[in-house]
Length: 470
Ligand SMILES: [Zn+2]
Image (tube, rainbow, N blue to C red; front, side, top):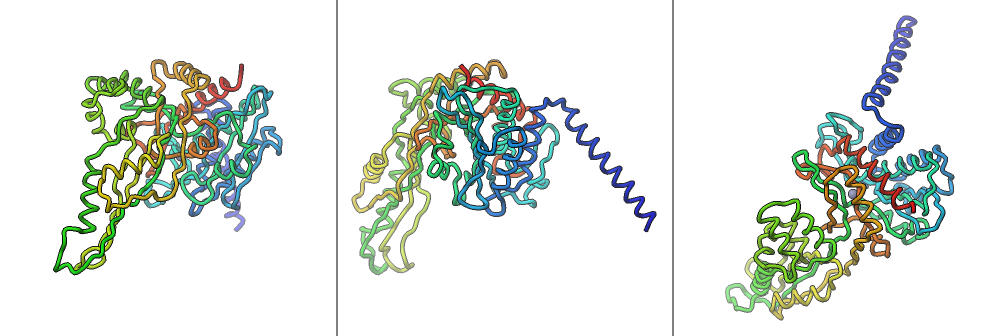
């Protein structure tokens, strides 16, 4: 017993020494600065707190970051954890400025998409550094930004920096889904805490292809989601006595006309500059076509060639596509009803009634009733404001010479929707470069390059300083 006990003690000492040595080697080997070490530590802490909707807890993550801020000298009054549900807390932290300008809001979401151990090569909720990457659920979406916002806020505080505006960091719940979207709740219940002249958020980022830095994206707008129900009703009858007036045929022919239809090309400020800048990166016919679609009116041949890319097509126009069908009630009966769901992604600024009227015209069958399913949440595009775009371009040039800044519109949606809708222009920008052919956000073995993480941290540090000093 005694002998065993001594062995156990010796083992414990060795273990502790090894742990101490191992930690030091990890920190020193890569030669990290104090603020880089801090960002890495916060990143690790966040990855290892499960924040999925089903099993996780964003309050725990918000409180962990709050503790770091308090330890760094922020007052309790400037570091708040709050939310509508015990598991769905949000962090709002404030570095006070002189107040000569309206606050700047830095947003990231704490929640992550579900990740199952058996789907991954390793535990998704254990932070792992391997082969130049950080692995774990949330490394790419969106805990790198969350860790960077907090680490940089602490760095600015330590440096005694006095911004000309309050810098507000909000780390929120339920961006990926769930019933308690954090930024929506904060805007509705604590508007003063998060109110800002504008916000920086996820949704942008750098693109790498075959090891080469291609471009740094700034996301300015999002398409608007709205589904329509197409419905035909008919008295029906026995299928042994068919008539030409058939609910399924009416619906199918209407849908076939929709399949052949394309909404007109309409570029906004952001998408016009997107195609202009991409024309400089692309080569050959694609480059020429991108130039041609920015002309007024756009060249139809160029439009149809570019539209073979689903992504470019979605950037150029509103899209509506049939996604669900439901018709008939018995094998031996003429259908009394036939219905379809058509899901539209409208260009920001287009009117739901106009889109509905276009569907009516295209389907061109008065037997097909077309109604909107619910009301869309509008998302006005954020302006290409030079106060923001110029520093982004300058700092991009400092860190990655020759890499262009390209404004984009996302065809899906982020939390920027709630902010833009509340009148706070929102810019998706991160300076976090990822390989466009290896996107693992929401997928297995999610990761972010180690170098990319620290470059993004430096980019966002310089950008926040530039946006908060005269
Ligand atoms: Zn995200």
